[in-house]
Length: 417
Image 1 (cartoon, rainbow, N blue to C red):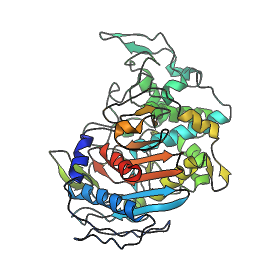
Image 2 (cartoon, rainbow, N blue to C red):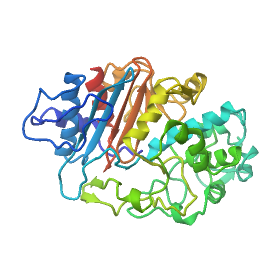
Image 3 (cartoon, rainbow, N blue to C red):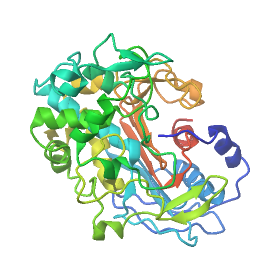
Image 4 (cartoon, helix red, strand yellow):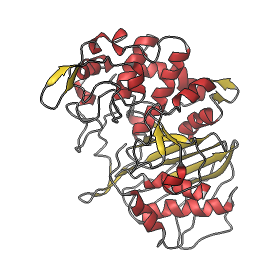
């Protein structure tokens, strides 16, 4: 994800917002296609009316103040939907969000990749401190940039470094950074036939620092995708289907947009000071059916319903509707602190686990959320978190640039106070 807008801006906008309305739904299959109107309807049905007012205000204000286009939010507590609402902008170029709407989830792909790696670890196929070169030999003789030149790395790259963003690979030391910083399909999507091609190129690139030395957000899950292929003997997409998507019923989650799926893809709303409006021309990833370069850090497309199944499994301690997908021990490992206070400006009070934020002190963020909530976000403003203490999860989906930490922060303030 990218943090390009001051999150306090969003909170300031909410203080001056005009009245709004929205319709709420009580069941899992909520009402869709609801557009904001001029007056507030306090009698609209909702499981939690007060939460409904707060959440709808956030969603409508995001549209009103040109932060997102149409958006949808879901909050589930104790297995029951307490809020589920799509708010559509009705603006030219936008699309109403339906139950089948597809979103590029970008970095919300990362937790899926992490869970896939946890399932492989549970099978005893690797250990956290194993050198990555044991499985992908091209990572054996790495170099590190010392400020003047590339010199041999002193430390081996280990699996745990990839899980925690402590590898030395960032998004920006690799030629043609990914996600890209320009408005065209990323060359990594066409340059490499598959993930093996990709990691061979990565291994030739100097690290920014010695593996394990510090935290830097980067391309680690793309490398983990290749590691998953080696360990499982399957393509990365095949292993995700077998281990997660099929047992969770995530039939709409994929690296691919074919012709039919493209018709359900939400347009991008961009408001970056130079461009403002809706477009399909700035996808940045190709989602090509012919590519096997499936990047586990950013490449997946999903629906709100599919991602809610993933969250349901996590909030239930790794069990999905009677079937265990992941052990409780694995979830505990995923949420251990690897880097304390990893982003004090964007995520105050949060530590880094296995590519997940984990709150140690939500008061620093300005709300009363309990210690231990964890989650992540995506570049085009998709957000989620899991709250194991109150048995709650929340998801927000839109397709908008620029990335804004203030959206989940405002949602947590509405939910927890």
